[in-house]
Length: 218
Ligand code: DX5
Ligand code: ZN
Image (cartoon, rainbow, N blue to C red; front, top):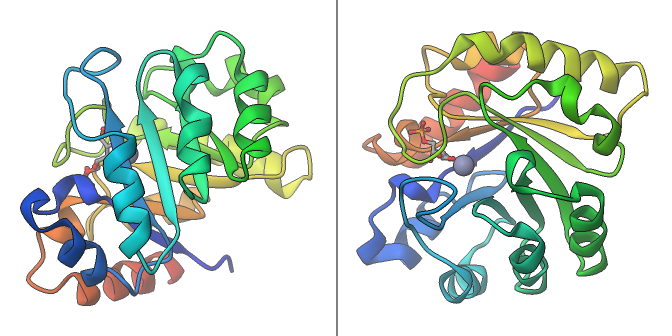
């Protein structure tokens, strides 16, 4: 079966101790960094200067999830900062193909995110130009929300398209992933699992990562 990839979300970390919090999840496959601009979503987190600082201390590759307007303008900068994957929201892009091209030209993988209510079918054409698909399983903006299982048919459809060779990308899920929900996401065909509160809310993040990985692989 597929090797599950676990990406702790720094959103649930202690922002006063960022370097320590990054190193605490050194066993992860990726470190998920939520960039919010208070316009695309009703919350404000961090931007390029902080991502550059995180990049300097992170032992694992950065997965930057841009919940921002005007991603055309900002996304390449995150790739130049050293992020391994830079994901933009389909709902915020006027020309997703151009954004993917610019992210790749700046040296990163390109990701496309869709909100829970956004149909996968609306974006199938452009997904040929992306390396990752992030299916949101909560409304973007905040950690600690409940998993929306209604998005799983989109995961199954993406899995089918990848397995049949029509698309070549990693299927990522983000929002409400924990010990109670990761198995259904894995069964639907997710490759890469973002988990914020389930990792940083645990007494020992490393143990939580290992447990999630084992559940997803079962
Ligand atoms: C929400 C963010 C998520 C969030 C997930 O807008 O995109 O990455 O950190 O947090 P949990 O795992 O607590 O739902
Ligand atoms: Zn995210």
